[in-house]
Length: 203
Ligand SMILES: CCCCCCCC/C=C\CCCCCCCC(=O)SCCNC(=O)CCNC(=O)[C@H](O)C(C)(C)COP(=O)(O)OP(=O)(O)OC[C@H]1O[C@@H](n2cnc3c(N)ncnc32)[C@H](O)[C@@H]1OP(=O)(O)O
Image 1 (tube, rainbow, N blue to C red):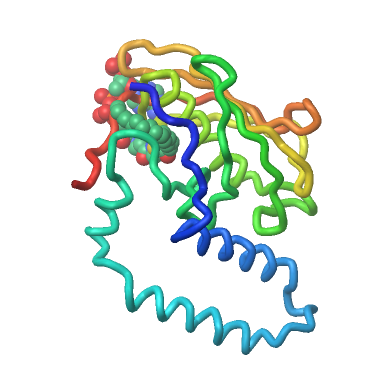
Image 2 (spheres, helix red, strand yellow; image 1 turned 30 degrees about the vertical axis):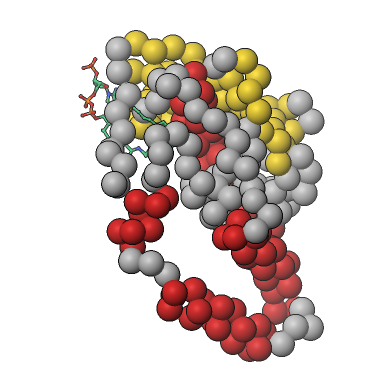
């Protein structure tokens, strides 16, 4: 089974609220305590929003079933999910039948070294992108090993491309490679071993 690469971001519903939350996260990290904003008031207003959401949320098991409906890609993951405010979000394009890529620009919430992407964020983006490349190529699995090499700093504030390719499938062992590039230069390269299995989706 191959998967859809695009979880379209909708202009309404939770996607719109999640896009607003991403703006809030970015603006808070940007503002810090040297901003002129009244942060006590900001905290009150954000807590009021959270109170409203918590009061109206469905039971957790109901939401889990909703999140995992269908058999293909999901809308909630922390890398591409239009329903997840911690997702940048990446939007993949097919390069060929086994290779995908996405271009994005990250900002201060994902900072590690000064003006550079946190190494753990790079690992997150690559783990997921390798996993989706497997889904795209037709044989999915869970990460058993992920080996990363950080060649140079990955910049914030300018476009970076995250790409992955399924290299081989040998029984249950899936080997997949990937990279993050900026200006065509590799910043991080990845080699992954995935095992073809997946926990059952909540139904
Ligand atoms: C299948 C259908 C799916 C459909 C989905 C379609 C939609 C797709 C859409 C969107 C894609 C989304 C993409 C998401 C991406 C995110 C990925 C993650 O973050 S995954 C979470 C992090 N990974 C874990 O938490 C794993 C935890 N570990 C485990 O569960 C097990 O250890 C597991 C599954 C990795 C292996 O356990 P075992 O019991 O199933 O398999 P054993 O029998 O131990 O090993 C099988 C073979 O693999 C080797 N193997 C296993 N682990 C190895 C390792 N670490 N290094 C080397 N070899 C290993 C073994 O030596 C064995 O080899 P020999 O058959 O004997 O030759």
